[in-house]
Image (tube, rainbow, N blue to C red; front, top):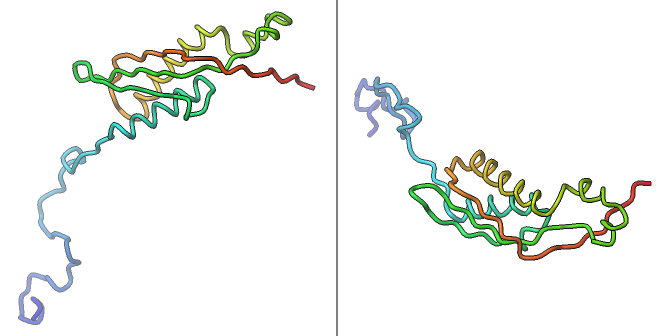
Amino acid sequence: MTAAAAGDSRGAATRAPGLSTSSRPAAPATERGRTRVTSKALSRVITALAAEALQVSTSQVAIALSDRAGALVVAIHAPIRVVSLHEVHGDPSVVSRSGGTVLDRAERAQLTVRTQAQQLTGSVIDSVTVRLTGVEIVKQERVK
């Protein structure tokens, strides 16, 4: 027998299951639950960011995450794409057109990964270390 059929005037029959009719205001958004980013999700986001910054595939990037006083420490091991030395000897300006020197690009990747990972995940990142494990030589395409 439902509450309405029993003559209960609380309105139970018109209320959707699981909804409260309490007059208490809803809890602030910060008290409703938690959002947790797992280490696997962090790893994948940081791997993708590093691969993009170093212009290599995600399968070529390995990362290690650790904790330092509650902040994230990131170590990235990956190759970097570069133009061939033959092309650099023929036209030294190809270095700047390809993004700068290897060290400049590694530093920029370090900063990019740190900044974007913090923005995307909300994690506090203490440091990012980029260890270049090799080079992937690409031929510079000529504009016709």
